[in-house]
Image (cartoon, rainbow, N blue to C red; front, side):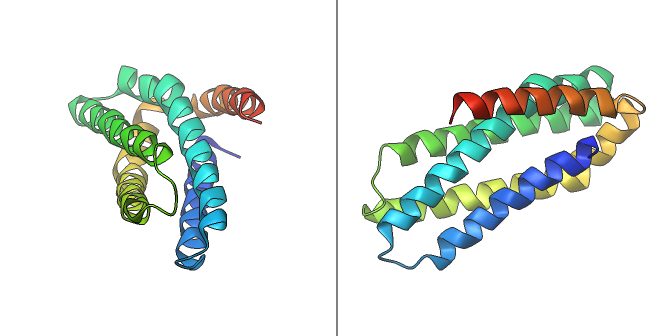
Length: 150
């Protein structure tokens, strides 16, 4: 799997979890909690491999527009981390949980769209020929993080 396929697979997985959450039903608190925990784990791991490996590699080779997109990506991750921290303090039965989870979903979906349509093409220009090594490092880091979180 190449670098962009790997990142898009993570995006697809999280979007699928958001759909599961939406279909769970208003009173399915236990199921919603389980899905939310999966979403938090997937987003934490994905953000970490992007922040520690992908973004620095792109930024190091990017033009001004690429650096701007990377900076925006970091800031969008920051908002997602904040929302996750706030959600972890709530119970799914709390009336704010669904509303905050919806805001998380909207932020993540917006971020995914920008990344795939704007940042990935920019990255392809700068990372030409290095994607497989970056993907290998990201996959290795992802495996290690998932083992820790098991």
